[in-house]
Image (tube, rainbow, N blue to C red; front, top):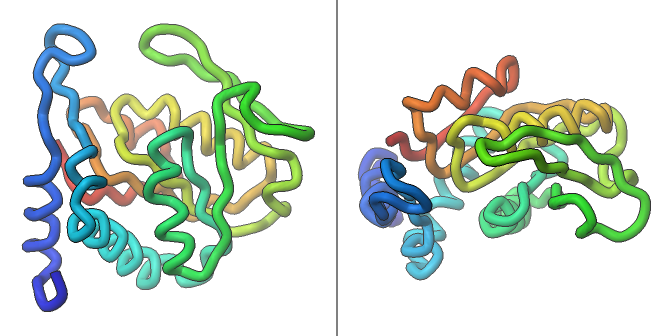
Length: 182
């Protein structure tokens, strides 16, 4: 992908995202990132695009925070490229030691997200990453959890944004950077 412009790279990524109509229920189009993960060139391109954006926009970032589970796929790669640390936000009951948690509502029920209490120092500058933004519930909960930990949230990063669901509105004032929009 070296030498290709940003628009060509984004087109390449968009073409790799596989739609599955009526999954997990009728009327939903599931956007599958597995083809990106299977293709080393595509995965590298995603991380290249994130890295370029973060270096230009947030040169002072100190930590990348990944959401369980697909944020774990992109977050460590980006953190490594940037030379910063990576921390996990997991579903309740998955992390050892003292944790901080926040509850949130999903389309189909309630859930809790948690982070180890010592993962973030107050004032640390962080970016939160996940694969997809739909209604914004999970990313919003992650932002609330990071505020509870007194982190400085620079913004959120996603590979895919489903724009008609207006999830970005829930994240305000935290800025959102999305590679691909559907």
